Image (cartoon, rainbow, N blue to C red; front, side, top):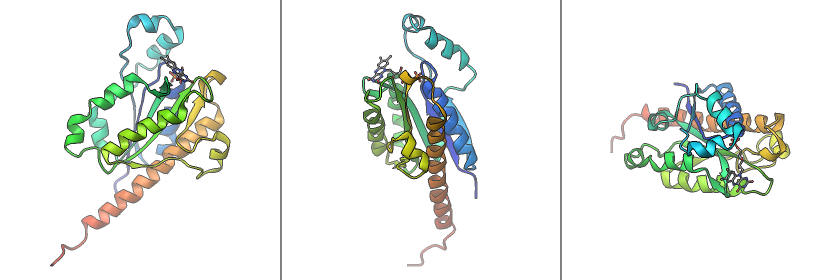
Length: 211
Ligand SMILES: Cc1cc2nc3c(=O)[nH]c(=O)nc-3n(C[C@H](O)[C@H](O)[C@H](O)COP(=O)(O)O)c2cc1C
């Protein structure tokens, strides 16, 4: 069987979600997927970026990572989206990308894929779940197969978010538990996509119905 194609599509201003995305890419690779790590293009005003040295620094450091495009979504069997929590919601940069998927969506090019999401916020009760659920709304519209981590691995009882990996950025950069949770989430999503792909392959080789 062909390997699963996994796209890790994320936006990160100051590097937290980027670290989770890299861990997710590792988990997807461990599960045997071909992986594209893709960052959402920055569209904030330069003035806003300049006001936060960590923002400008991360923008420079991540310049070598390819920007996400619709072709990455079309290519993927499974997509993991990462976003910082912004006012309890998805960052505008990622939402703008999502709002540009209309043509692909209209062709059915987003349906039937596996989707999962991860986030970071500054505080523990700052809206991680609402952000992940908001991304879930998009996946419903796309006809996606939502694969959350749930409590399917011991690390989930330590990281504590069954909706998707999340990290409190106010506590510092993601540590071992959050990174392990991101790896597990991606591995589980890829394994689910692999089962679906294998099933589709079997259906594809069935003899045509004679009736
Ligand atoms: C405009 C804006 C809105 C934010 N809203 C929230 C929020 O609702 N809750 C919260 O805990 N943190 C909030 N934050 C903090 C970000 O979630 C945090 O900086 C981010 O998760 C760090 O991820 P990054 O390093 O990948 O950019 C906000 C930050 C900005 C700039």
